[in-house]
Amino acid sequence: MADESLYQEIILDHYRNPHHKGLRDPYDVEVHHVNPTCGDEVTLRVRVADGVVSDVSYDGQGCSISQASTSVMTDLVIGRAVDEAMKTSEAFLALMQSRGQLEPDEDVLEDGIAFAGVSRYPARVKCALLGWMAWKDATAQAVAASSGGAA
Amino acid sequence: MTALVDAGLAPYDVEVVRADFPVLARTVSGHPLVYLDNASSSQKPRQVLDAEREFVEQHYSNVHRGVHTLSQEATDAYEAARTTVATFLGASDPHEVVFTKNATEAYNLVAYSFGNAAAGSRFSVGPGDEVCVTEMEHHSNLVPWQMLCERTGATLRWIPLTDDGRLDLTDLDTLVNERTKVLAFVHVSNILGTENPVDVLVARAREVGAFTLLDGAQSAPHQVVDVQRLGVDFFVLTGHKMLAPSGVGVLWGRKELLDAMPPFLGGGSMIEVVQMSGSTYAPAPERFEAGTPVISQAVALAAACDYLSALGLDRVAAHEQALTGRLLDGLHALDGVSVIGPATTESRGAAVSFAIEGVHPHDIGQSLDELGIAVRVGHHCAAPVCRRYGVPATTRASSYLYNTAGEVDALLEGIATVQRFWRR
Image 1 (cartoon, chains in turn purple, cyan):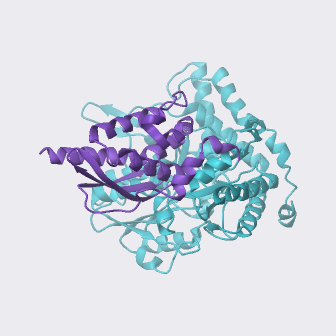
Image 2 (tube, helix red, strand yellow):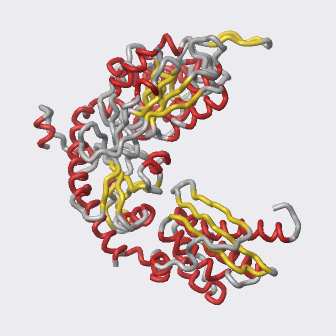
Image 3 (cartoon, chains in turn blue, orange):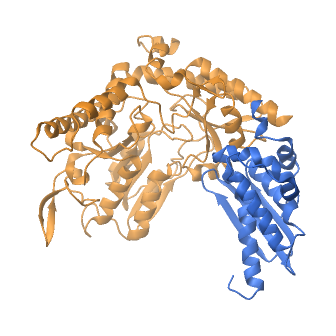
């Protein structure tokens, strides 16, 4: 099939064997995000301890791109400082919005570079961002709650 | 061809039809385009494009407003379009045809008009009243009624579905009862393909004095519609699914009802006398066409009706039924593929939803696009139907008058290719 630039082997691997999948305790915040155009959805939990993303767990249904992207995301943020993980998230967002014009940095995005081809398919960018946006939302809420602000 | 001969109809030359649609000659991803997303929107023939262009180039002006020549010619063309649509629908009076921007506006028009009716009026909806829809409605014929019920305190009820994609009419007499103000339902489902038994539903609505609204967005493009024979009070279609441009839809309603219903949108053209203290309203259809209407799109819609009438919608329906049968047979023969909706062509339109075990619809659609095949994936603005059948989304192939048996075969081969790719 000619679409292997979109469906990279790394993406297919994460889709078939997703990392960190399944909802776990303990957690600080749980969010539920949906993609209203296709019905894909993810329920995601975040645990933040001492400024570090100590765990991310999730469950959901969706296409290969959304499921694989969420799996890659967990690898990239779990165990990282929140600030550092947020920067990675921004790098992934920039890649997705690049319409194929950005050379991804493997040191920052690791397996995430496999999604570079997705940025050329505007209809699929939302799929790739579903899990990332859920994580960002949940983490921001967890940080706000722990710093005494209103969650 | 056999189906046509069996039905006593002249042969249908699909290649002649295809020649009218320039886009069908293009390629996608290096393959000939196979356009099977017609339930979403159809392609446009030269005749429709030419009619719109000729109107805009030679006769365009605003309508109902001027004494100059172009204004008169534009008004004549616009009103002639209304007459053409009325004839197309078997309506007795062109004034029963209201041009809207799409089908969605038409449902909202009726729902808001009823919501604007004074308490005690025959149209008023309030606490204790009920609105009944079906579980297979497109969001456009569901959400406006939910909103009406929220605003007025009325109760929304719905007719559920059977496992094989039909309406479950077991409790029809309870669901449509003396409290029912409106029964709004889809003629042919955009996601399941099901054609509903209009006669049964209309008969029950009449017993209890409920108004009936039929969503014809997926029927009017594909089969002969006669609103008088259907016996409904309101019928809705949209132009872009039946060879016309986007931006024009139609609400047909019985004149006696349209003339008595309160307006929806206020503004120019829909008035009789305007004073600072208040206004009176024009009769239908002007009452429901506030502001400058969709002029050139209405002219193009009339050209689309003429195109369909000349081709013969009975022949189109027979052609599509043959394609649908071929597709259903092919899907049933594939391992790991299931059809969501009626399994045969019996009381069924051309939209066919299916699932491939282990492959998400988004990935199916993307992989088929690589083969030049355009299908729709998602919930098709009928999310409750997906929920009912336990799927997040479906893949839907929907053929139209220009599709061929070869294209159906290309889709079936494409599905087999998709299965090989995702199972490796």
